[in-house]
Image 1 (cartoon, chains in turn cyan, green):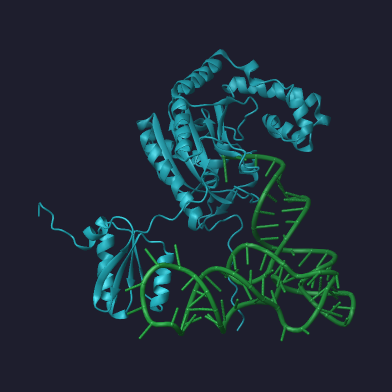
Image 2 (tube, rainbow, N blue to C red):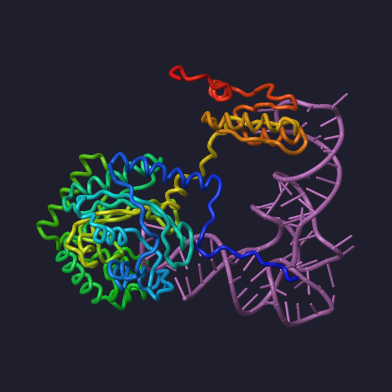
Length: 410
RNA sequence: GCGAUCGUAGCUCAGUUGGUUAGAGCGCCGGUUUGUGGUACCGGAGGUCGCGGGUUCAAACCCCGUCGAUCGCCCCA
């Protein structure tokens, strides 16, 4: 008999447990609470889509599409892809499910996403995001509301300081194009002095040279043309309305003219909430306006804004969270008390008391183990039945649960 | 895809210039002190030293390869 080898977990996946899992849950619960305050409607989305949904909307040349997608053929020979982001799928649903009738539509969701990347701190192949989108709203007010929600979420997670909102505008389609060609002209002139990566970016995504970390590039970034010189009057007004709206709402922000977004569909407002506490992965929440996306999926022009936030990254900033309190432990000293203990335990839980049971090992070990669970109270049961409770603080809830009083209206 | 560092018990880690049978703490299981809030003491289980090759009388330790993890580049939340 050869030994059976235990399968290893897949690279870049995580098994989350204990205090970390509690932090993860805290992030999601806080998001759910805040999103309701802003009346974002909960949606559930498929984890996979037809490959074209992502290929067409994100841009064929982006890294995500060209080398990071988990794509496969199903048994019918159709090319499907595990979602690498939320926005494209939501845009597809907006078009195929008739959600236009609800426009302007505020939606929120969260769940796993998949990208074939080299794992490192705060980056995984299966990772999780919170997501919020406003579809069918072209006014700057939508941007303001969306950002205000992000800001409140981070504050309620206790991350008010240490995370800052960086804001930029990419202008409308024409502004962005004019800026882009000016950048290409500027960097082409000094091509030989740029890093190898940036020489390549010059072809694929010149905007990205702006936030290169290479000192050779930084020298020329300082003198590069900035978007403001190319903004149309409309684009300038739009951005002005967003910033003054944020100021009025008490959302702090800083302008970062080098901030660009990787995916093709972004226009106008672009933003990131960043921190310096997560090593290389400083962006904790990012997004922007994507007025061109619907058309790339064959729909009518539809303005929209959205953001996504990495749950793992937020959870790391939040830090480990303790297990929820344990209110009561039922300790059974003798096997003959087991039936009574089970009745007691059921009553406690039905009465809304967080309870657990310890019923094996020597009596000494049982007490040791019960104490180690850190309960507020211990209910003692021996062979003759329940005979006592110990612990500090009020026992009202426990007593009410195990001695249910008849309802006055019954 | 590229680079750096690291792989010893379930976990965190020792292990000397290569030298007997690879250790500790925690955890787990059992026991002792006449059975009631974390004590103390005793005992036990648990290791292909990531895997494969090489050097050597001798390898956890040196060399090569490989797999994995971590961190960084790229990219991104």
